[in-house]
Length: 133
Image 1 (tube, rainbow, N blue to C red):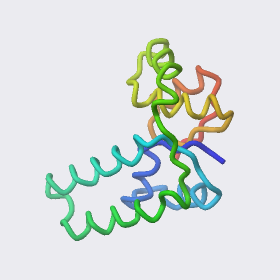
Image 2: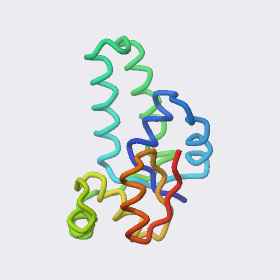
Image 3: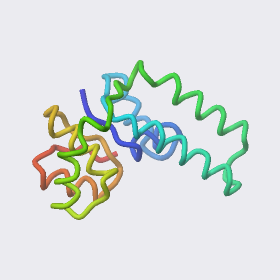
Image 4: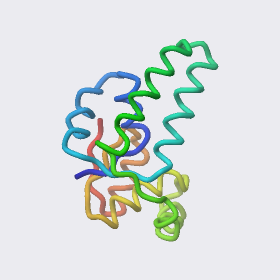
């Protein structure tokens, strides 16, 4: 089991370079906070608004997301991690959003799957193993 953040999940959904690596982790099972769903939907919508993909492509991507949750991603309530995430955000000078994923991984004692270099560095400083994809 690994924690997965939105940057890694989007790599899979958007079929960006390295998406197959993310797929392997998803097959093994991952955990995340409910924010991952909102962030992923927002990123897909932004790509549509910018003309980077059609509405049909966006619909397909959102369908992929629906299939992943809750089968391959066990989603937890982010509110359960707010206190710890606030401390992490303050100590590491990162957003509360990134800190929430780190807090999940830290509390559960599992690695964090991410493609965000700054978040990976902050996680390592917090004693969380990271897997960069």
